[in-house]
Length: 187
Length: 240
Image (tube, rainbow over the protein chains, first blue to last red):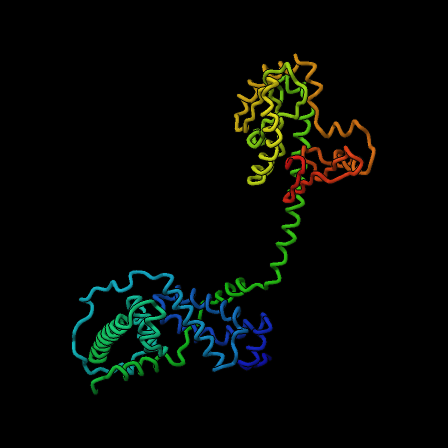
């Protein structure tokens, strides 16, 4: 009968470099962390690369975890930092986005509470890299524009405008999706 | 539905991803596991390095052994049948052994395939070999023209130039005997003191011009004049 380990057990085991405990920690947390990595990536392959790098860092730096905040929160921060590093490393065609993409529609009333996570994830992944990273850092992780500007080496203004455009594109895409959903229901 | 503010929008987005799970590919853990192999294994390269060093020493020793044969049998050189590895020739230095009373020889070239060492070491070595020879080169009043050349010479030209030149050496039979290694000198005098003994033993073991250990034994106080152990190289003769 498999013994149930608490996250604290796993932490201690990992600090001791116990391979079994490391694997247990991975098995217990990886699916949540892959979701984080997926938000920052274009596709699953990139996300899994980041996840892999992230866990290697987790095990290498585990002794730096001082127990401030939750262990899972710490692992998540390592993942986010790895994703940011990955973005910086692959810094490709940032800010090269056709402006026609963004319609100047006023906010319309819409509801995406019924939309699934997978659908939304798909939309986020389709965002240009620069939009996606700012959206994730600000909306999902709670970074300030100042922090984002510092991390990515851009101006606060750029960070704000990228967030604005990211939101606008997402809204538009959600409306499109919801529209097709309603059409499906109606038909 | 009300007009949705950014804050609401963001809030809803966050909620959608709360407690969301996506299973990673099954083989992903193996990749992580491989990359976090225990660091203990890093100790191994030390042993490899040690083994490599021993291997290097043996190889270098063998190379010296080979070249030494060429050096000691001058008559064979005159026959022009020296078959040496082209690789060895590349780093070889045409050098002249210390010649003291050589009057008749106008032009002399003795091929000494100096110890072949790798890269930077070979350069260092070559310059050291050349040092005493440059001193001799100053003694031009004796009509001895000595040519020092770095033998980047291709093998063919090396052989063709050899015959006429060394024929001269053969003619100058008086001089021929004088072409002696300094270490042979020491050997002839017999073993008078500890320094001689060490020099003798070292000479048997190390056939290079610059021994790994060399003592001055002219005076009764044996004093260390030469050390040549790889990186540590010292020769008092050349500092004069």
